[in-house]
Image 1 (cartoon, rainbow, N blue to C red):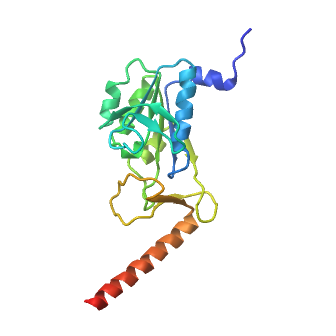
Image 2 (image 1 turned 30 degrees about the horizontal axis):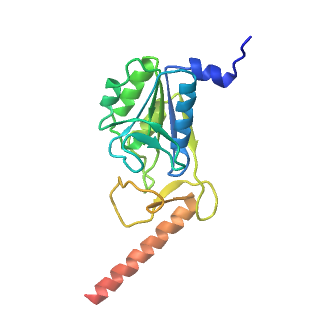
Length: 210
């Protein structure tokens, strides 16, 4: 007699659902996405992974975590393209979902209604603490939401946000540890106040020089 664990049964038979993995940068979102997708592959399910074409930080054709775990993926420019590549698929993985258009919500709902398990990973907030892209709406329609946390680099508490450490006001700025650091809410507020004081000081100095 062959015995299957509860986890194996879930990987094999759990279908038609939306799972969201969200949190700040360096929190292990992509790591968890890859883990779930590989388990589905081991369960002999047909898996397809997608990522936004603009994300070429580690690889143009792979989803890669900060710990350098990777899995092959299909880069796409728009969420509607995911439907074109998802026929005969049991599980769909989507990384960096915050960079996709709002149509991703409808795409994920349609896939789940077809009986596909959809696993999504993405930032829930941008560097200013504003809800990012389609992630909030995806959390609302998801069957399961997992919030993961990085560790604050200042105090060691659970991180709240991805704090941008370079002077750039673009909302979408692809980067890593050179451009971002995970901070808890308290340390983030301190950092923002420090930056404001620095900017005021610089403005005053520039005004005096004029």
